[in-house]
Amino acid sequence: MSHASAPGKIILFGEHAVVYNRPALAVPVTQVQADVTTDFVETDFFTETRSKTDGGEENWENSLLIEAPDIGLFSTLRALLADSTPHPLATVIIRTLQTVGVTRPPALKIRITSTIPVASGLGSGAAVSVAIIRALSALFEQPLSDEQVNQLAYETEKLHHGTPSGIDNTVITYAKPVYFVRGQPIETFQVGAPFTLVIADTGISAPTKESVGDLKKLWEANKSRWEAVFDQVGGIVKVARKAIESGKWEVLGPLMDANHALLQKMTVSSPELDRLVLAAETAGALGAKLSGGGRGGNLLALVTPASAEQVASALLSAGAKQTLITTIQ
Ligand code: PMV
Image 1 (tube, rainbow, N blue to C red):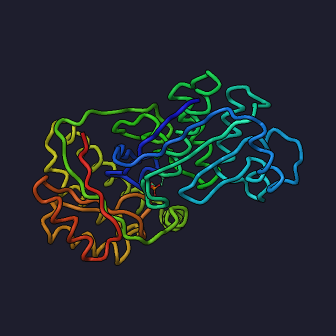
Image 2: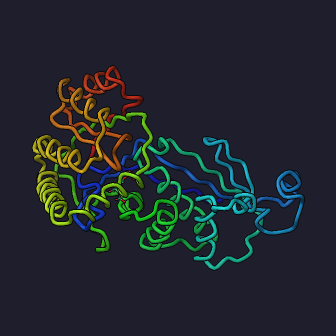
């Protein structure tokens, strides 16, 4: 038997500009996590499942069962592969088995649970991938290096999200604050003094692919204008990293506001996000911004430990669907 877990993540600064090779900062969110348990099982266990899903045909993919009760999934690998676009879970399982050189695994069960809200910018997909890769490679006694785990998780992200920068899988694999520059070696950094954030979910699901695609069209129409905006974001990210490392976290408030204004310019905010950012600040947040793809999803508010509850409840009253108070350390 093997088990692995992976945390959620949040982007602090630099989303979108990171796609254009500017740096971004992201941190793990350890209050939420994905858990994966894998175990070899008796083949008999599958007889019933097989006859239900595949007409009993003999194939090792029929003897690999995936259970993800949170999303109501109970399926064989074969059934997941049968769809016209292979299911993300199937892709990551197949690629992990290929990487560890297992071509015909014995009957086994993979159980996936997660407390990371789905499709809300907290990296649930990447966390599930990372946990599957680690649990499955450990089951075959061939644990992979962080670099291999990160690469495999990135390949899965690419298949299902177009052109991701790779920031999600990186911060989740290393489970440390990351200063991320696309295509560059991974750079983690230290948090000089802990700081508190309220993460609030607008409840609006907005595909990152679309906001990234729309911004790309704007960029193509006027590259120099947008490159200048991305440079400004890159400048904010560098100042923010120094502030975090030296424990001067109060400085992050105005930097968040400045980053949010640039994201508004990029057309990736939304009236709901703007309203919630304002509500957080009215309730005492030191700064706030959208986080991730935008147009919906999450926002972040910088708070003192004393004002966290007050800001979280103001956000809920203003229409946020969920809030999470997290300490970054
Ligand atoms: O929506 P999220 O949290 O997965 O973040 C997307 C971040 C972008 O910079 C908009 C896209 C990317 O691939 O980095």
